[in-house]
Image 1 (spheres, rainbow, N blue to C red):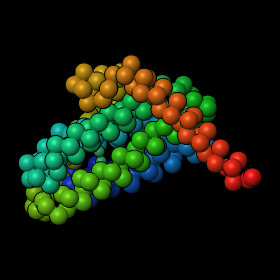
Image 2: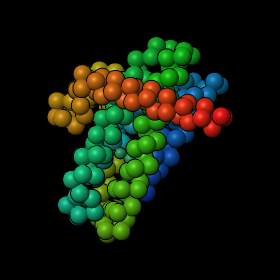
Image 3: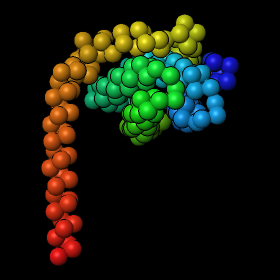
Length: 210
Ligand SMILES: [Fe+2]
Ligand SMILES: [Fe+2]
């Protein structure tokens, strides 16, 4: 991991610390797709950081933001659901053997999609309301609590394939994310709908040519 040393801040405004990590996700996603770096090291740094960051948010940040009424139950639960989607994408990413295969590229693209979606939504629906509704002193207390937990998880190592699979199973058991069977079924319905939509578009294009 020497190429991708992850900073270990210990204090600061939690909102800024979280934004710094979101920027780091982007850097590491980009590194993981370069062909002139140690991709294995980038993959490891990225997945460890994603897991530690999200676990610390769920344990230390979301509950307090709810208590302060900056966010509601919906935002908290939706954030947790998106974390579980990221966890699932990490499983696929870690399961890709080697780093120069089509499977690696596809799994990385899937991971980038869910991570970018989540950071965008978290910044709009959680970070922004917290900036308006939560005092800086509280944000600084949260900064210490969040950073301490995040760094502890990074220190222990929190994103082996087994650890990440266990996190995903926990999320399924707790109903944070739907079971694989339900998601397969939903995916099938989505595929059918997509095909129908494509037909409508093709028909419209043909009609325009007449
Ligand atoms: Fe985050
Ligand atoms: Fe998050």
